Image (cartoon, rainbow over all chains, first blue to last red; front, side, top):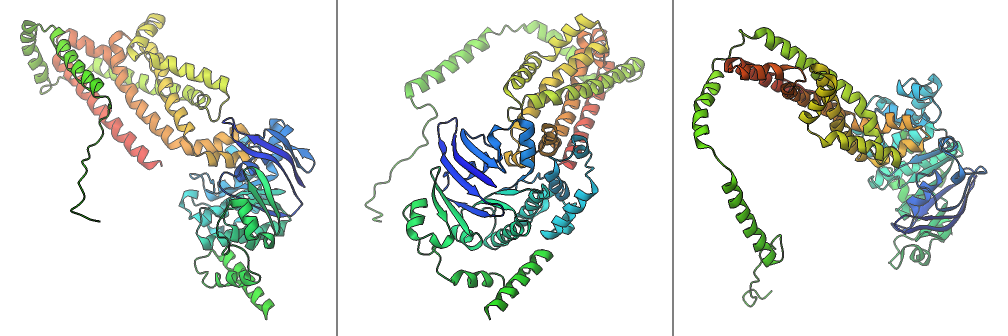
Length: 291
Length: 268
């Protein structure tokens, strides 16, 4: 569905951020993009929806070459690409509902968006999504009144209201505590599988990526140096991506991760309702499976 | 650590100008300039002595301000000044917003940016009085020249500060709205406006305040308002009426100051 061919980005400063990257993401496939700071992860996902203009190369989304689009066609293409940000990027002085509805801006006229008169079907869908991410009571709160995890849930709902075909996720957990990080990663991966969405997730936290994502791509200095499943990420591979370091604590030991995950679920008392019942169900299911 | 064996190292903050010769040259040069400058001021002591009683009389007039004998002129002057203030602030603000958007480099293309920045530079280049003299010559005496003058100077003020505020907005919030496939106008409405609106309201209130004070001054060169009444009072040595006008100006400016502070607190 998404096919990147020989993508290169050189910034005006002369820095080569991407050096001939080729990557294919199938429909419904979730890819975690790992690599050290400055490896070009952020640049890569931003060239896809052209928040950053690529220097050369092709980006085919369902056969349409994105870098060649004019501004009107680009706006239409952007509607189908949802984006989730590290610092959540909610418009702080707007309400939760306005933030979620802004996911529809590419579909409604300026006048409708100005007077905040969105079609009822869209408002229904926005409420459904808020409920799904566990924030149904928060719709009229201002975005800056929410906690980090709650803001990221609103960011997820906004991206999904675009009814996207692919999600670009830029460090979704880097501003969150470890537990919230897991909840957010779980929510994102669940939603992608529910909706058959493809996703590229930039992530610093390698163990977290290995826990939730089946395909890992390693980027170093603008080039792909690893593309495979989490089990293949050995100490040598991690050294390829990040450089020399003692990786024994990071590399997956067969079977140990699942239990560790369940232990993290024991006291989910401060979770929003929907997410809580969800993770309980999940944990219960897994325990039943093990017996 | 061998405490006693250590020789304590002296430390002094490094001087701002490293080269000692240059440093002392600048100090001595500044002192010489100051002495020469003070010596060059010609003070006419007899004129000052003559003026002291007049000054005392004027200050004394503040204790016996006369609101009554020129009340009709004063009233008319203030109504005119307040109309000039309101009209010029609203008109100036309406023109300033598009120019401010155009002058923000992060949302406008380079040609638009350069044109808008030039308009701002022209508006800011001249002091109100000079523009008032020009507009009085163009449109004749009266409040219309005053409204034009203050609208014109409001553009430079609001557009510049608005543009700078827009250039400082959170880039991620703009990216997020742009990534949804929004149009330029929607981007303004959803990403820019919420971030700059409180400051814009604050600037407008502040400018209202400035425009009122300026409207009193440009009246002196014939652009209407309370300034004309004030100069007339001074010309006739009616210090009690002049004091009354100044007292009313003070009250109105303080009221505006208080009101704008209140509104800005409410909006964050």
